Image (cartoon, rainbow, N blue to C red):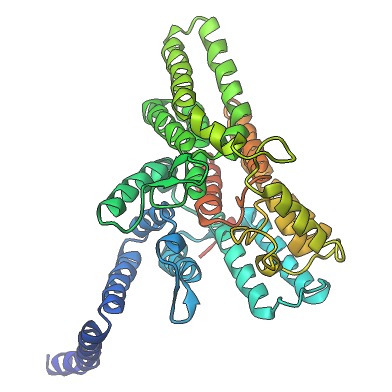
Length: 448
């Protein structure tokens, strides 16, 4: 008994001192830097929850993608830009999830492609004068991180919850935008110089459109894959479609056209076969589309035809930006200008909003040339094929059209390099693959 008591006291002493020192540091910080102190306390709580309830923290991490933190807080912390800190923070919070669930490397091809891209950068690319090693490393980390979400071996029931949460992200963003509007921190709506009014939630319109794109495309797949949850996914489909059209972003709407047409074909085919229950979603879908087009037609016309351009349709400066970036990389077509070089290529000739060309094919061609961009595209196609093989036959056409829509969308926006697009996209592919497995993954595929 005596030894136990003395051992307990000796063990308690260092922890007591640690708690005391932590309390003193936090108390001092509250006086001099209250915002940082609150942030530290919040981070400690999150780390505690992530260790004790790793699955619970994964829901929180996924929900944070509904907010464009870099547009709500324009600046840096401790000399590091806020978006980089955010990416580092979510990775730290997910470490316990990785330790508990393990990693499955069957979908790791894009990560290896990024490793080769950074090797091309330092070995063969012709750098711009503004380019540096730190830019390349930072771009490598930032672009590779979302592909880590392809690897986490979630439990099947957790993966199913994640899928439903991804569908909820646009609604969460709009609700968060309402709250931010009430406290005068961020406007729920964005009014352009053309007069178009666009909903942006807790993002900018383009980022909310990325969330809504996922929120519209995924229900098409899940209604076919999980008919027992069809009511939830039909509701999400309707809400997210209105949000998508309300953002006034044309790229994702056009990209989804083939998927929508196939949905009508499939549902009409079921109705013709005598399944009269499909008449209700068929009629409701038609009414929904006409209502959305009617309410947003004026906005879409203002954004597309307010300014006269050489292309006939106003592409918001994309045509000029694409030409500019292609000319900049003309001297190094095979190996590009180096990973991250595109972010420093705009010398002021273009509008400052074109930090990147708003075309992922040109972006990765600029950074990695023909070799790097084709390699990355092939690695993504390998992932798409693996997921496709795991799906049931009725689901496969909708999945293929979802991938086609994403690839089409990538022609007009930063789908592979924006948090609100690539993280939900990779997260969904992993969860879809995991949920479609007949049993738990074999241990030989999982590293803990």
